[in-house]
Image 1 (cartoon, rainbow, N blue to C red):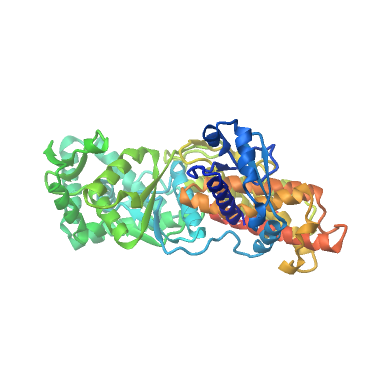
Image 2: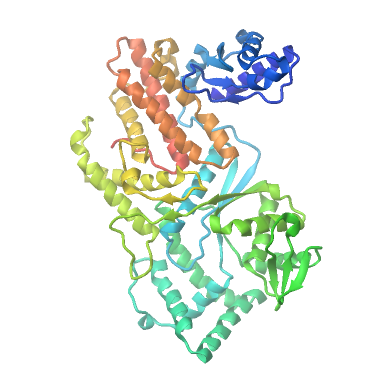
Length: 585
């Protein structure tokens, strides 16, 4: 209802301005200051003061008087306070909000005829996923979820770098060394932890080898890279064995978040189908191409980029960026829009890619980059494993362990009479622990760095995942104790008249608009902010408004419907963030 209400406010302001023969370009619609009793406000009077040659409060009063709320379904009173024009909602708005939120899929917007491919994670398949990169799959999955709930046709892609030097070194090392040559046991019994030892062995061997030995090894590594470039099937199979094995283990790790993908798109695909060669040839012919320092480059000064983009080596072999350009043209051929989630160290490459896509004749506006800062390592009992660093698996393990301790410590304080057995505790520990990690990471603005703190992420009393999850569990508890699920016929908005009820209805009403706005700007942290706001509103309602012991049957039925509405809003908002909503805690 909030989206419809916001549209009516825009229409009302426009009609009022037109009736006064005033320009309608900037309506100044915004969230009202906290001290204003309104759902939306307009600061347009600041702009009108000059037009009307009067003070902003007088301009606001004149425009408000020109608006007839009777012409609209959801606009109730139109008042002013100082320079602000304030819009309140009607009983119909509140009634229809609670009715709409009875649907399990509340918050989902109508389907749009627009496809979006979201590429995220895309970590090189050289070993386990490091905790410092954990923000990419968590943020990327939330971006995809947000777009999907906003009605877009979304595919999630992982771009596999299987053609660069790293994979050539990895393949060479895997073939050269035996298990007996390795100096450690796998940190975990999973493929990527096993094979990464060969990669590390290969790199340490190259660093310590004498010049002749290192040169011979480099020749073998170069032969692998050249084999890929030449389309040699045997080389593809050799590299593919390593890539697919390591990637299989990485998939298992990411599934714990969970972060799942519709397609793993391999870099070599665009070498084998000739599209990389096509891109290189077209770039050579462009006015921006120069041959300098034994490589083909693009001068991008015209795009305010100082650093040249190298797209072809002197031996005519391509680079990662060349192949990624072919990859993005393939995206444009198959999807209406493309979104890529990238670490802050890829800012320059992202700008170069956008500029080069423009040079190639594509519309770079179809590509949006979501840039994020990295996650600093958390404190705690985690420690590096034989110099391998802290992996995402380590973080998730500790999250579950700490959540289990919190759940067990709180068992004595539970007021619900549903006994939790060991399986229940373990389930809740996974939901809360992994939810805490995801929520803490996705709730921050992507461009801001994060120092992960366990005491904040797992604080049941503060604005964290457990705090919001507990609200969902409390809603489920109330509904479980009621005699039957509420229906639309049970709702009487006139029976929901307290300030706390009104505030909760207003919060629930805003959910679809939050999804729309978060999707428009690829900013899922706004959904996290919303979950805290609706959780606060529910807790205030819960403290002040008895549900099962309400004074009248009509109030009880309506409050139960309001609880169900809050449950759906919280559950679906958490789902966007990839956080599970427990039925009990």
